[in-house]
Length: 130
Image 1: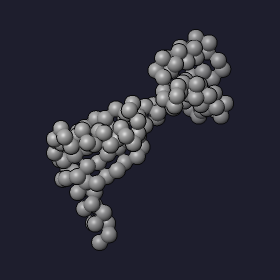
Image 2: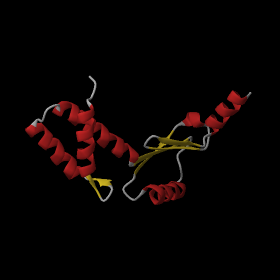
Image 3: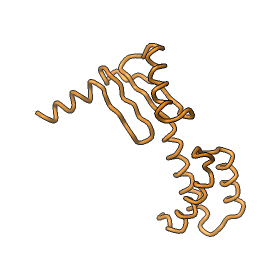
């Protein structure tokens, strides 16, 4: 089902009111969602779906995934955590994981941005250049 322009505009306005000091406020999101469900304006389901998409995208922007081939020692993990928090803000959540297929190096994903400094990626790039 295609979302109408009016529903997108209304959802965007709701989302803007959900930001407090540039950060998403969970209490406001819950209040806005409840209000939509009780008032049921025209096209409320489309509005709610689009609003949920905006919220999901914002939450993704506030979550980082750091992958390495081997588990990082605590000092290295703390250094990476500090750099990410410095760059993206203190409300960033960070998850560390291991992926042996990376062979070495790191892959960091924050929202839709990916920084891939893994050995596997470098080998893939070299293979494409040959």
